[in-house]
Image (cartoon, rainbow, N blue to C red; front, side, top):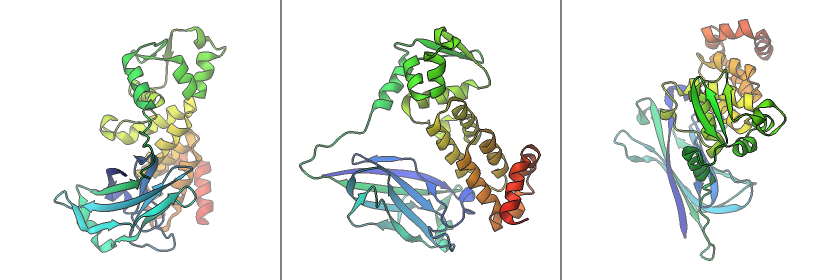
Length: 325
């Protein structure tokens, strides 16, 4: 028996063409065959010692267990069809938590990349086919997020509301307390909010609170098309909210999305966010980006980096130390 999942994800060519060798663009998590998977796209190869061809890797994300799978990947051409020239298929192999990657080190030569850039995007199409023992009983994907999301939408059993800039959001104390340590202290502890049926929040926008609330119930974020005119700005606001309420997983997701969109023009703002909202993972990545030879002279002359220097001279000192200045 075969359980398969086919996904498409888009790589922003302009945002990723300057990534260093060994740096990847990641797809969202994919559920197939009772396991989680991810596609990693390395624009300049996986070997950090040289700028190589495009590398594609399918990663087995489950922390335990194993799965037998066949994976296929291709790039969509300008006719909206998977291109056989840029298509690869693996043979059957066993993925295990301790040995969890399979890919193609020479998926596409650099000279051919521009053939697949459509409206500034490279569209990657991948199919993961997971084989099951005929005696096994297939397990459907977890649907707890779906059910909790429906609970949020229906307002059944709500016992607390939040007023954000005049807009009211209804919620459930137990869900928020289970998901966020700060809400657990506020809503179930000895603070005044524990006895209040309506709480007014400041320093957060309704749109940001709505997305954060949805994440707490479903453990998922809406698509970029639902995040307003500037998804990158929304991720900055969400990073601030995640830090405020100790939502560590949301914080890392926002950091990754901001990192995915880092360029010489935006790295200063991303570093500022990382410093303000206590995100060492994003800070480390951004500093590595700045000190790279191909980025340094351009990045330090941008407005965002100059603002960074005025607010956080300690970061400038760290960058200078890294480059030996």
